[in-house]
Image 1: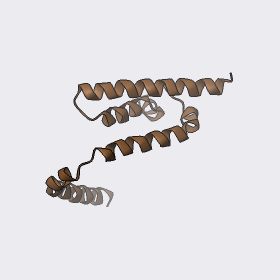
Image 2: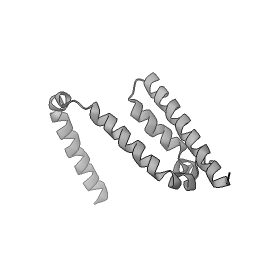
Image 3: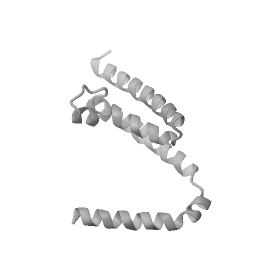
Image 4: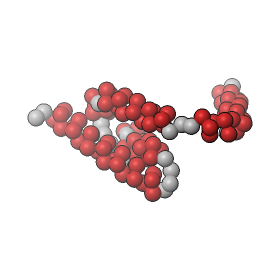
Length: 113
């Protein structure tokens, strides 16, 4: 088996283990499981390793080769989030959502300007 395939299989194993641990840690901390997945992906990714001058757990080559799987996984996570969204909660929080949206837009405009 070529070395390239080995990198991809190792990357998949690291990603799956990271997602499993991130999801369980999120449930333990009583935050949404998706947040744990995102934090695990952030810590495993090569960008985090580059910032702190650490060895990369997952190479950029492997991530490029796994692009299709990444897109499908992202779609499934977004479907999961959308499936749990209740319009009753949105109606109840509409004033807060409006205030946060306006503040975020104004802050972004000020910082970029």
